Every structure is written in structure tokens, then in C-alpha cells.
Image (cartoon, rainbow, N blue to C red; front, side, top):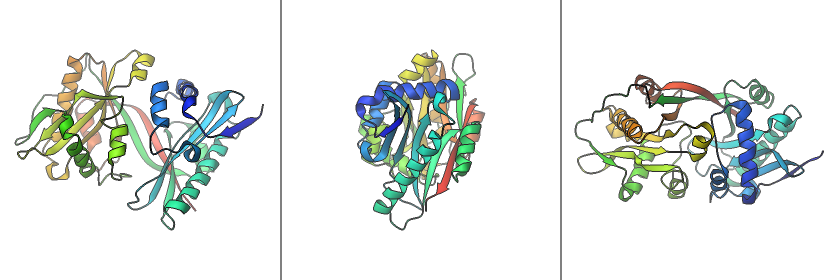
Amino acid sequence: MTISLKPLATAEARDLATLREEVEHVDRTGLHEDEVDVRHELTDPKVDLARHTVGFWQGSRLVAYAMVYEPERVRDIARFETAAAVHPDWRRQGIGTRLVDWMRSRAEAIRAERHPGEPAELLMDGTAGSAGLAALARHAGFAPRRYWFSMTHGLRADRLPALGMPDGLRLTPFDPVLDEATRIAHNDAFRDHWNHTETDRTDWDTWFTGARSFRAGLSSLLLDAEGSVAAYLLADEYVADHAATGDRGCTIGHLGTVQSHRGRGAARALLAHTLAEARKQEYDKAELVVDAANPTGALGLYERMGFATEREFVTYARPLD
């Protein structure tokens, strides 16, 4: 049967959620999303479905898709992030190559329009142990650029780290009054991290404290003597993950310390507090994803606090012509 191509539509959120779940059954990514999650993604105000997405359809069934995200700001290089997948039953039929070709062509067109003359590269993520993805990436001119660890801490039986607060800092539950101050602190905390560009108000409202998954009751701040945000932890809970696995997970979505307060144990204090609070609220596990080359040594901190690596992911990159 012929494969037809067309941009994704918000009304097809269920089709995309189904495809991603079928991919997870085989690839074991540990990522679960329901129709509401996917609709939220497709209605991101910065995503133009006609320009940024494509679906591969066999009749009424979505068998593959791709999305390209425009970099709004360029710090050193314009990096085009992507999302893509092929249904396991339709792999090794050239669809993956066609997806990569589409993503490259789309990114090159956006670059010519929005960032002419800027150095640029296309990024592609996946599980580190996927031989098929590695072969596709190599064939398309990609090379591994970054590795990420998905880590888990059991909250039922695992011993929790001791609580403690750094001198001169005060713990407070997340307060919407400090939402904008927390966004500013986040941008300061991550300005020396790979591929970070400033998180603006729209992205913050869409993917941070305005997201469906955000849990204010598990999130907290550390304030300095002047009442400024010195460090923050924003936690999430994913309903689809609970439905798929039976385990209730507290995701450490964003944890950061402004650069002037680093080295004082702020991140450790916030994390220990959230682990204790999550256990109190009867969560089964805490989880997070960390850059293996995080410049602040976060990986070592998480290991010392009892987190163990469950999965490894890789970001592949290739220059754009």
C-alpha cells in the first residue's frame, strides 16, 4: 500500500500517541504519553504544524512522523532539535531515511530564512543501545554528540539522603508569586550548559510551571537573605506513565542553582527535601534525566544520593550544509 505524507494536525493527537506507545513497547524508551500530552505538544504556540511536522500514513494509520523545532536564538550554533519515530512493523523499508531527509531539508530551509550564514546542525535523539538508529544515523552523516542518563530512585524501600539546608538560605514551597523570579534563576543556572538558550515566558508557561504535569506540591525554592531565588526544584508527574507502569513517579523536571550560589549544597538540599516529600505523598519512585557531561557534576551528585541509571540515551548531530 502506498505511503502518503502530510503535516500532522491537532485532531490526530490520538494517532500520534498510539504510534509512540507502540514504539515504546519495542524500544523500551520508558517514555509514555497519552492523547492529552500529545495534544499539548501539537498546540505549542511556537510549533507551526504545517511547517514543522510531517506524518507518514498508510491508509488511515500513522506509521511514522517527524518534527523539527526552530531555534529562536543562536548562542554559538543554530541547533535544530527533532522528534521522529517509525512504527516497528514498518522499519527497514527506507522510511527512516526518508524521515531524516525531510528533517534535514526542513531545517536547511528554516536556517536559510531565519539564520542565514549562521553555523548550524541537526540533532536526533534515541536510545543509546539501538543498533538500527545508530546505523541510520551513521549512514545519514550523524555522529554521537551527547549522552544522557535516565536515573531512578526507589521511594518505597530505598534509603533516603539526610535532610539539611545551607547556611543563609531559606526553604520555601514553590510560590506562584515567585514564578518569574524562578524563570530568571533558571536561565542563570543553565547558561553554561550545552544547547541552552534563554527560556522565555511563552516556553516557561508551556513547558515548565504552566504544564499539565507540573506539581507545585513537590516543588520548592531556596531563597537568599534578600528573598531572591538562589536555587529551585520543579517537579512533574506524568499521568500516562502511571497508567502504563502502575508506578507513581515524581519526576525531577528542573533543578538548578544560580551561579553565585553554587558549591554550597543547594541542589542536594532541594533534592533531599523533594525525595522525602514524595515518599510522604506515597509516590513509588523519583526519576530524572541528566547530561552525562553536565558541567556542574550533577551526575555524581545524583549517584551519591542513591539514584541509579536505568536507561541511556544519545543525541546524534550532523552539520547542515
